[in-house]
Length: 304
Image (cartoon, rainbow, N blue to C red; front, side, top):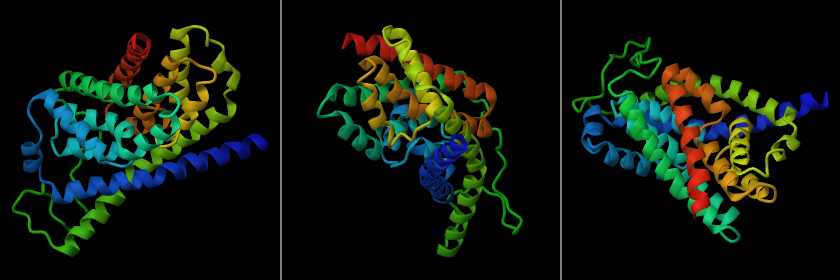
């Protein structure tokens, strides 16, 4: 009974910690759908893949949310015909470089290990940029969203793409935002619940001494903490302090790997991604994230 109780407590903690940010992401997604036309998006996003991904990263800085919130926003961006490289760079960078996460990372590390703060920030941006560009090349002009049905409803509203000729009214816009928010939230929250359940099972049932088995080997310790970050599924606004505690056991390379991978991908987000994107797209994305973070953590951190 004690195990069930602990699983329940952790599940509720993960779910309700993630839910406000997921709601925020759905609201932002709905505002984009209501007010930003496809034509506007096409104008503000540079055609050059490098500059486009940089714009996506800059957009990520202004979204004060964790990894849960960015998935519905990135999906909405893709529905707006934003290039894949832009949406992916935004989705991967935002949970690391947004002000809330930067502040928590600063408080956790800057006084004692300032280089970890800078490594998380700089490597997070570089990895998001590179993976965004690679994904854009691989899936260029391919449909990657599983459910790309136009947002039509039973109340008789017309299907449209929100072009510049649409007249906005306060009542109509509010209803549109509520409608899209509810749709996005319902679509994602069911996967979040399942992901939170799996993460809570892992946190309770995974023996902590497993983490220290490979600690003397740099490569194995990096892989160990990457897998730990993936399985434990902590919110990126709170994982900095866990990372700080891990410094007493693990080297800097593995802790940086932990701090980079968790915000970009974990169990709960994997399930949410599989519920919204095609399998080949999600598998390729996850593979690139693991490879890039492993290389960055082992090579760059050791060199510096």
